[in-house]
Length: 283
Image (cartoon, rainbow, N blue to C red):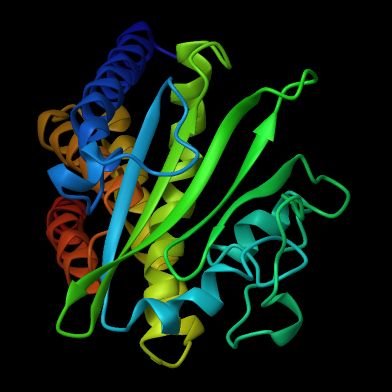
């Protein structure tokens, strides 16, 4: 490989990495409180621990009593995690999100396990206050809670309810860099879970097409970036392909960490596809 091409590759990788870090640091404060109001972020919730925490929320057009059956069946081997089952199952979690209320999981008790995967049950139900609070915690070997996951149902008037998710950690539980790594898959799965519970509680029929569209939109943005990168490396006029590649990185960050509506995902892809098609037609 000629030196100039190698240098261009290294410079491009460096710019992309810097953009990824800056982009994530920019969007992080928003995704840690996605959908939540100032009062929801500040309010005390049962199970709160004294370290890092994040709060996310969504409005559901249903009463707390109608949402409650969906959240109390949360968990592996129960109603599922309401998120991307296919992604969780790649790692062998054997998750199957329910599309109906399961009577056998409607009477949980304090101390019941909430499992991440079959045979991996490190969390136990710690909060049941029907129809407002439901949550579980993980503890260290000495029995001290180190992680808490609480779901709150707050009436919002006019037949609406705010579903609030609060995760919190003991201040000595994990180093800050480890918590930051946890945030990344957490936000992806949690934003999908909020939307799925909303759909279920509002009686909107489940359609796998939605998830397929979400994945496809993400892959299109990735493909646009890869095509731009190939042209950036192999053509002397590299400025425009580099700009398109960096734009694709920004779009991927938005698609991954902000859970935009489907129409906006499509629009972002169109914005990327147009320039990619244009520069390749010029060859």
